[in-house]
Image (cartoon, rainbow, N blue to C red; front, side, top):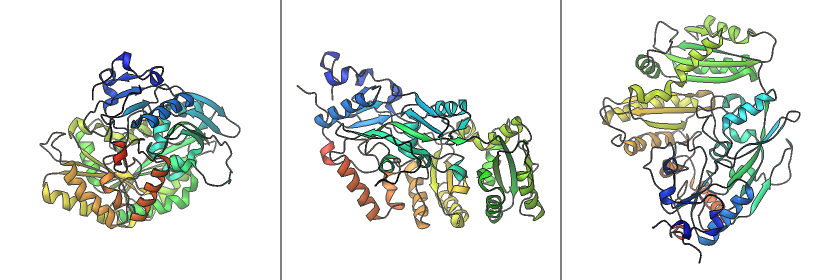
Length: 477
């Protein structure tokens, strides 16, 4: 479809910074999912809810598909554009609107970066607990759209647990303003939950009221090593009982992960003499006056005494803490020594985790004998990350679909989740039935049809596009 010239731009959109296909910046052609770059039909940059409502009303009247983009850090293709869509960027829909330090709430526009929200909370002596590696790029609207998780889920829960109220614009341009600031509000359906995790398929979130927490006065990390996964689970159980709400993070790295990352990145300060066994990264937060409350030290000391753990190193400085977390966070540097990878973000019951990972390795190496298969994750909340690399193949040649066809059925066999925290988008759409029953999918589609009958909002994500949304956008006379 030919992009209209400036003189042909829709008057209703021109005042929101509308740009046609040739003028759309390349950063809007794709998200972090690795899908092929696609130039959208056009883009707009609204600055408030009223302007978003005008844009959606125009799309509704002209049957124009719309894809909302925030920080574009999604890994499932949820913000990936189509050639016939109008992109709504939230770049200008940003900023902190209000912080209430007494009731511990923060109100922000959807395009506000996660890191800016963290800093605003900190400035008032409070804490926003959702934390991701992409904190400097991702937006709070995108965090809500995917119900993002992160390292602190074991203590604070997913993004939906941090939301008191939100405002969003529906497919026809009508505004649903539910900016509730009350912790207790039992007046009927909790409508905000429909939009959290819906990946922009039901409405466009414009602003949000978030819950804030008291920031722990001290945080301390430790890395532990044990022989088998039963010891991992015994450690988790003991830490939950011993540390209670002080347990902030419980990360587990498989032996192959430790070997691969520490060999590939010699700059990492590995704390033990041996690299075999499972490695645990445990973080405690507390509010005592002492930097070392003794809780974590005592807890891990008991596990050493019981021979559940083989070795323990506790961070005694901020540098020690950074060095330990650098091993877990080294996943951002795969490309330096592995090259292109196929990544998975799955949920598995703890009782089946080891057997399932073993089955995955066996199935993958049966077809690619030299494949690198690594596991790590937030085991305290059942979230496991899987990374696969077939040596000698570039990004385009990596067997993404073939590996997915091996991994996801194994997830389905144990009633796991094909997406623990990154959403469904385009990439995981074919495997939605691995985690959801037909009745659940049918109800989701009923809700989608009720709120977006023409399937104009983020069409093709989670569900296939309906026939009514397949026409190219037309300019009004």
